[in-house]
Image (cartoon, rainbow, N blue to C red; front, top):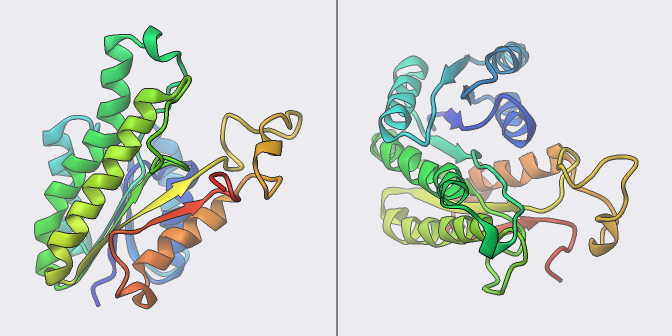
Length: 243
């Protein structure tokens, strides 16, 4: 099994946690960043202590050609590509009717379009590897088609990711490639949460945010051989958010 992975948006936060967890499981990893070069290089150094190859690659994946170049560079430098985790995406909290055209495009581009650009470029490499894993990042409750107050564009993008992932799952299963979605809610690094602000927590049955490790482990489950027969699924890591 070829153990070569690309994690977008992996200089910090959830993406970094996933990439480091993959490194601990023996995967060579490409850490992608747009502006956070120093953080990406530090993450690479940490991953390398696991005895794997780790590289840092810059790209603005909202631009198709840069996304394609990122995937191409990953495959060339790691010696192939079998796992793609899409973790890039801006958040917007704004009343729906007050969302500007620029804000709308920014959210759709950074979440939905980046996932499409990177994954489309990666699929031929996953087919060449003989097996593959695609893990995309949704959002808690994005599968529920209901009205939103302030994050309409964001949820539309995440719901689109779910539909896109399910479509890929059905198409690519014949190629030994699975495609699944992890959907975090409030995490320990979320802007909604800090040690002095508890207002968001009562809506969570778990009464606490997710740790980055918990989200990373969910992603790595889909990548593991234990999940060979699981595809097209959405796994919420949200402490009961949607219950």
